[in-house]
Length: 493
Image 1 (spheres, helix red, strand yellow):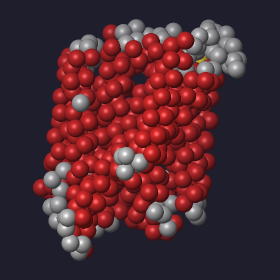
Image 2 (tube, rainbow, N blue to C red):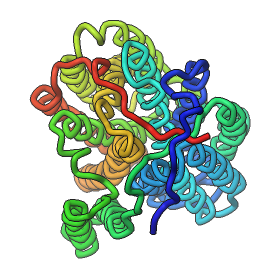
Image 3 (cartoon, rainbow, N blue to C red):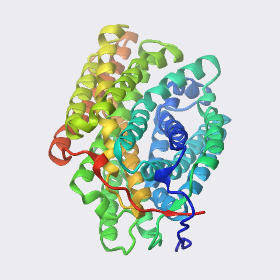
C-alpha cells in the first residue's frame, strides 16, 4: 500500500518563515491541551459516571486505560499517516474525529458506549497528536524561538493532566460528568477554524509505503501487554496474566525484528537507537507511567476517602499546575545556558520526592501537610522534565521521520500511562486485600485499606520515575538542541 507521491511546490512558503507562527503555536497548543487533559479529565467524573452507568471498579479503570491504550498503540501508525498523507490534513481529520467521539461519550447511556467512545477518542488522538507535534517541529526548526515553542508545548504536556482534573471538577460540579467529554466539541471547533488558514500542508518525500506488518505487531503487542497488566489485579500467577504479558513481549520483539528488515519501517530504528533520543524516550515512558498512573489514584483519594466534591478535588490539584507553569517559564529562559541534561536529571529526583511524600497520606483531611508539599514537588519535577524532553527527543530528526518521531514521544507517555494505571491498580488491589485480611472490617478500616492501596501506588510511581534520573545523566548529552539545523520538508500548495 503506497501513499500518493508528492512534488515540491517552491512557491509555497516555508513553515520556518511562517509570518503568524506564534498564532499557529496557539492552535497547536490548544490541540495538545485537549488531547492531554482528556487523559485525566474523566478521572474526577468517574465516581459520578460509575454510579449513573452502574460500572464495576474494573470498568472504571478501563475508562482511563482504554483511552491511553488506543492512543499509545496507534500513535506510530498515526505518525506515519501524518507524514505520508499530509500533516495538515491529518490534524484536521484527527480533530474532527476526536470531537465526534467525544459527543458519543458525552451522550453515552451505557458503560459499553462510554468505553467505545473513549477508545475512539484515543484512536483519533493518535492521528492528531503526531501531526501537531510534527507541524511544530518544522515550524520552529532552531534557535531560541524553538526552545520557547517547545517549552509551551512541554508545559501543556505536564500541566495539561492537572488542568484536566480542575476542569473535570468544575464541569462535574456545575453541569454533569457528561460535559467532561462534551467540552471537547467547542475546543475542537475553535482549533479547526484556526488551523485551516494558519497551517501549511507538508509531507514526507521519498519512499512512502506503509509498513502494515509492523503496525499490526506493535498494536497487538502493546494491547496484549497492557491487558496482561490489567489482569494482574486478580493475581500475578494466573494463566491470563502470564499469558498476555508473555504474548505482548513476544509480539514486541517480533516488531523490532520486522522493523530492522523492513525497507520502509513504521518506526525506523535510527529514530530510537540514537543514544540521546533513546534516553529521552525512556524518560518519557517512565514519566508517563508515574504521572498518569499516580494522578488516577490521587483523584480517587480526594473524593472517596476525603469526601471532596468534584470541584474541590479538582482545585486540590491546581497547585501542581501552577507550579509547572511558573517553573516552565523560568526554565525556558535559562535552558540555552544550562543545557538539557541537568534539568532532566534533577527533575525525576524532585518528582519522586513529591510522589514519596504523597505516600504518607492518611484518612484524615490534612491536605496542607500530607498533600500540598507533594503536589508542589511533583510540579517542579515535571516542569524540569517536560520543558526539555520533547526538544531533545525531536532534535535533528529528518523531515521524512518527523511525524513518526513525534508519535514516538507521545506514544511512550501514553503507553507508560496505560501500563502504569494497570500495574498500579493491581498493586493497589493486592495492598487492600492484604490490609483487610489482617484487620477487622469496619468503616474506618475500609478507608484505611484504600489509603494503604493508594500509598503503595505512589511508592511504585516514585520508584519508576526515579529511574529516569540516571538514564538522563548517562544518555542525554549536555547540549543545546537549538544549535541543530532545520530539516528539509516537502511543501504542498
